[in-house]
Image (cartoon, rainbow, N blue to C red; front, side):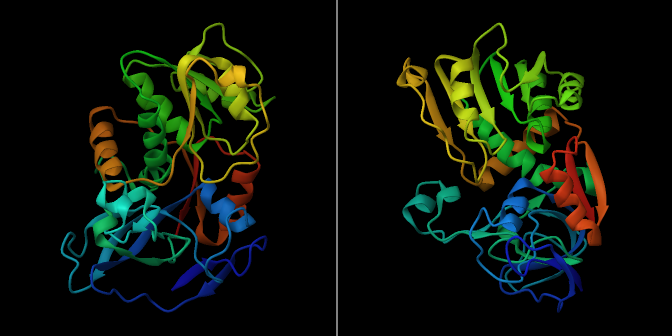
Length: 329
């Protein structure tokens, strides 16, 4: 099978011919129909995250159909369409798993990082960590839901969202464009913050229902109840705190962020809080897919061929994509 592999951080991905994966125990092999390109993939390729396995196949927003299954894989049938997310497995017995916090498992397995992911024609996954996907989304448009949607939703939940609130979104890419629609559908007022000079993203945010759009240096006329930071830029933390009311929360949604600069305690005082998001739980996935069944979202995608993975990553790095890049093998 053909796959895009990473020989070393900082190097371009290379198209390689790999053996077909074989399923073990609870595993299923799927034919990849689409795979989103996530900012975490960019962090892996660039070496922001320490490499785990030379020659890894990135990709953890995987949509495909089951072609074969291991002896203990009973959740899906051959021919079923499934989604493979970032969290590919947990130990099931550490203190975190035992307390329903499997996203913090001490020995997790991550798709496209610990095990080969979806930048390939075929992929293998533990069927207990796969999701059935809503039929209303075709393969390409379903792919971003599996990380941009799921991690965005976990960040949204951790903001303490309730009633009608003023929600800031910093960095208007794949995750924010999904959560913006969901938040607006639930009656939230969304304030979008984009990089300086990016008027296209400002227009995109307003088209998706944001009531205000500006740069990260701007301040709306009202204080935010909560802010979600999707851009991996540490200086956005004090900026978001400045824009957030007393008792508000700032959620850092990325797996990697540049250093957070020092800031005056006064920005945090008033029972403001800063917290991070780590991975996802299967409960997050079930809740998210149920919610978008009631409040459908539209994912905006730019398809690329599998062999164009480096072009897709470069476009993501440059902020040149409204919505999400998706590889289509």
